[in-house]
Length: 126
Image 1: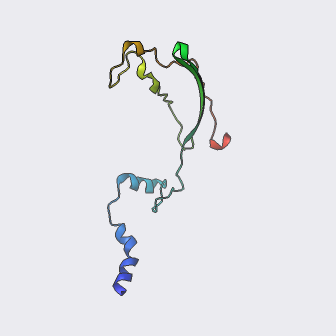
Image 2: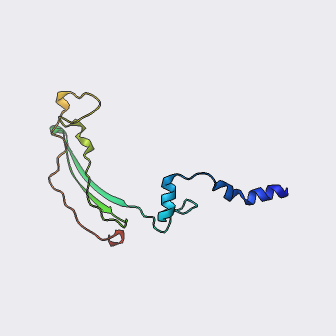
Image 3: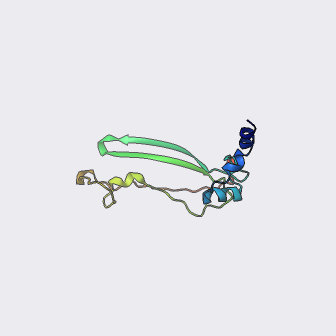
């Protein structure tokens, strides 16, 4: 019984003998993750808020709409680029895809007429 108690007291030490992945070691060093796996003092998450309005024009085979995205950069870094992925362009002529599409299904793809970028300081500013 005494041996079992001694082994149980050393269990955390024995568990730490396993090699840690490099990403986990870096997270500990950067204080983004604590040793027990919870977020550390320098942990942060970015987030976004979407508002989408759409109208289906069935006779024209068109969906017209607008979208507003508010992106909250809670990181200590400045974002240097904005990436807009137009996944709906799978039906645009000339787009690379893994399957054939009939000529009657090809379109000019998704088009946008306006893009605005507003700058806010932090999440709590909204």
